[in-house]
Length: 620
Image 1: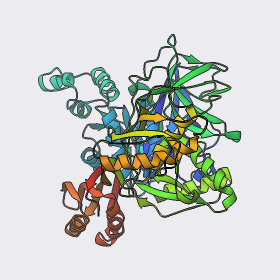
Image 2: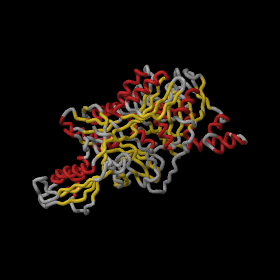
Image 3: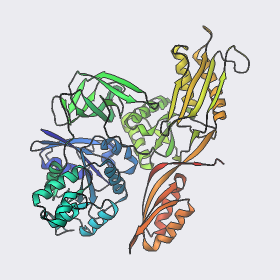
Image 4: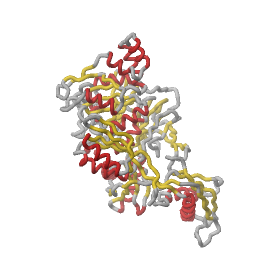
């Protein structure tokens, strides 16, 4: 039995969950088709997902075709949940990218295809909803070539397009496919140009090879609700997407790509296994890469193992939900992590403060947010002033879903402040400061603390280390210094959080039995602030990459509005009816552009943006 892990990806409302239901129904896994509108689908099993009709968390379901078990990972389509998509991509053998035959190529579709092509992940394109009025085929293929990827070929055609009689019909393997493959396959190109003509078997072999290496994307037409074209898509999955090579006689190696909280704080981790086997009661050691490059271990014994497909043991290539490893987090690796794909998305740019509506729920709220941050590490939950918790988020929809999750899953009513753009500071140079015993009036702390502040690598976050002799300080004092350093640097010289810093403890001392951890917690911010002032900081604001698709008559006013908002343009392309404007824009100006776009384009403009990094600015 082979195992294929296939991701279903799409812009929201393109029909991912409906396609998953159809695949499970057609292969006997479920007895009836669920409906997104009715809220009774197999993979959207959360109350919030069913009520809102969108996928929020990645879900796994399986069906069998011949000697192949296909694990379907149904991922979120809304851009606010891009972190879930990121983690799913890491464990896939291939993907199915859905488009609606009516709406066509949409904003999130372009984001996903860019990432899939960068990872060279084998990807099939499924054009859904061929039975809806307004469905397109040839014109849509042109859009796909222009806006997603030029290297495609349809493997099915459609009769009675846009009616309830629409049917997907397999296309013969012939000249049209050969010409498309010739653009990415040298052997096919030579055969087309110099002869003899490639045989159908030659073309099938080339199609499988170029799909497997991510350079070519077959297109299938169909309808998830009606079932048309789905059988051809399944054939494409099993024939064109190869399973990742797996070896059972090696030590177990895998990736945790999702974590769900359970009753009593127990965590369920979803593990994709690449090599070896995992059984119940087996003791496992997971590796976690820390911000400073160190690797720490997380150990535990498997108490429950639910393998996708129902097997007794988790074998290489498959996925299972396991419990028993306390503190396990998303991104933890089992065994040697080398060689695994690790896509990275820019962190969120909006920060919000969350407070419990009732004061007695302040502690449960913080515990709940920390548990949710383990499911989505990009949230970066941290304690803020006056008992609030600061969170990083991608958008308003994510905020609404998070509030509902707190209420329904944790019983905590919480209020969210409006999201604001999060500026950052980074150290500009190196600074040192110290204060030492004996006790004196200036600090009134029985402690010696010396700190060096310097820039760390981009993306490293905050790192604390030490040059003092190991054991020079009692563990409680050392921990007090480290925790206080990170807490203090949530506010820099300009009032923004400091990131990508390296703080080193260069001097330490205490007086037994007088010194306490409180002395170190009190003195550390004073010394750290002096060292930071000596190093200096630079202020950065987040930028977003954007795409605006507008009618021709709106091109000039939209471009002018974007320029006034500080946009830097990277491209303007189009034709007789619509134009695509691309560029980067300060995150703080994005909302005003989004609000103005409908009026400037008579409601026909399409806007997409995502974090693209940050840039230094002059503080005011």
